[in-house]
Amino acid sequence: MTRRGGVKLPVRTSLLLLLGAALALPPGAQAQWAVSSNDNKVVLDNGVVKVVPNPAPDTATIIDLGVTPPKVVAEFPVPGSVVGPPMSVAVTPDQGLALITSSMKVDPADATKIIPDDRLSVVDLRATPPAVIATLQAGAGAAGVSVNRQGTLALVANRSAGTVSVFTIQGKTVAPAGVVRLGDDKSGPSHAVFTPDGKTALVTRDGDSMVSILAIDGTKVEYTKRDLSAGLRPYGIEMSSDGSVAVVANIGRGGGDNDTVSVIDLRATPIRVVETVTVGQTPEGLMLSPDGKLCAVQVMNGSNKPKESPFHNANGKLLLYRIDGTRLVPLAAAWVGRWSQGIAFSADSRTILVQNMVEREIQVLRWDGSTLTDTGQRIKTNGGPAGIRIAPR
Image (cartoon, rainbow, N blue to C red; front, side, top):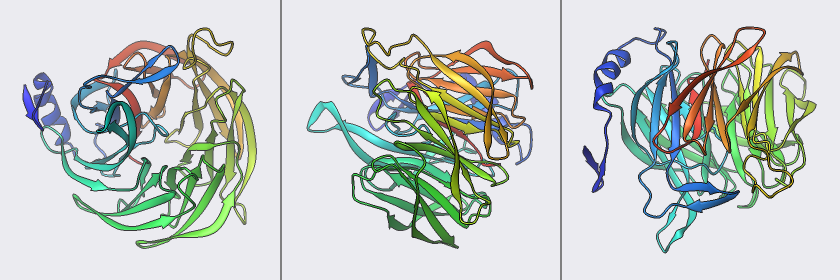
């Protein structure tokens, strides 16, 4: 047992030798980290999100995707939250640091409620075991976070503040570098992604259904005052590896209607939304494969609704699309768990992780180029897995 903040926590000591050896690998070696943020504060009770009495600390789980089957190499306490897009984790390109946001916390005045949080935790992935080395302040409702491919800048979308926080990265030092206001505190900035050259970023705003364009010059980040219209409540957004397109998940109002995913053409002048496809209820999880060929979409499919709801289904779905220029072409689908969240690809774009919040596990699927298969492997997490990412490629 170890003690953090006066709370006794279990440590997976059997993993420490493996972790020490793995983390010693240089960048580009076989190990590939997927970092999962796990929320212990809330559970889904027949379609209703409830706060857990006296919850255990939230955690983060490090998974090596460079081996088959994927394996857990560490798990340790880090604040996190299921509220917001499941892109609440970012990993630096050298896999040295992970940044994890906590959009909500238990209300100190009423332990049955959660309120906006603003914490950004900096995790040293090369420490043995990994550890939080800094806790920084972003904005209220700190949600989606991304690091540029140069490894020098991070952006955090603050859903309850109407802003994006900017942080510089130098070695293991992450420091505040400004705040960009996009709208009022109801505009709901949810997630931000960089273009590969690091000169532009796109930010979803689920509160007023816009995607804002930011211009970046070094550490200077400015709102261009240009917004795109993708769909109803754009939430998650990810960028293709070649920077040709971005894909946006529009989660709608949660009323049982089928929702959509939109494609933004980044090579058009000016950039614009060019394609929108219907995918099903609540496409919260969204990820593009490292090879730039695939788009994976996780739809909750009503698995987060009460059993008596006419829109309830027992399971969510993982949908796989081929990226054909600016079009999404359906390829395959597979059943996943309930109230599912984020998605992560292995570096070879063959292994796919899906976070199942209700089951408190990560489901492992395999794509062989023609068939999407559930491998049957489930990675148990200490907390409901709520956000997951790998290093940008």
